[in-house]
Image 1: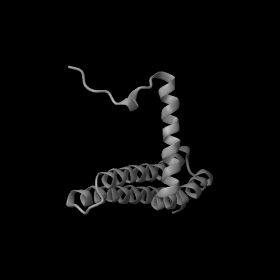
Image 2: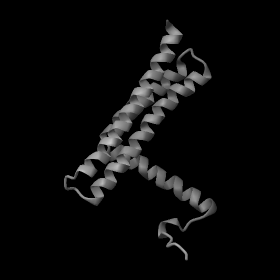
Image 3: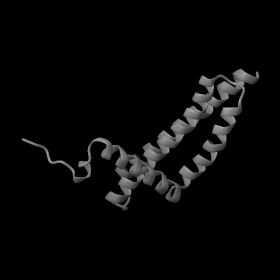
Image 4: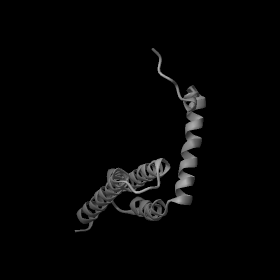
Length: 128
């Protein structure tokens, strides 16, 4: 017995990679236009990346600092996707919908705390 195949999974090879890049760019553009939290976090990530690049720390530490900023953006995008799906299913209040949104928000909080801790440790070790 064969499973049904989504019409959205029809591309293969290089065509799939090119399409995936296009979808990713559309996702980033949509997040920038419609997600305030994503814009705010990006406004921290961009100067944070520049600061990390000029800090007198090892290349590995620079990668860690920048990686943590990108990690927060990744988790925020996943959280926004969860919220969009929940809202697509129904806009009425439901405990499971609240849980899904709260779990996503908690994930962003934990990612942000982890990023802050990484920055604190690297900066503390470098300057104290």
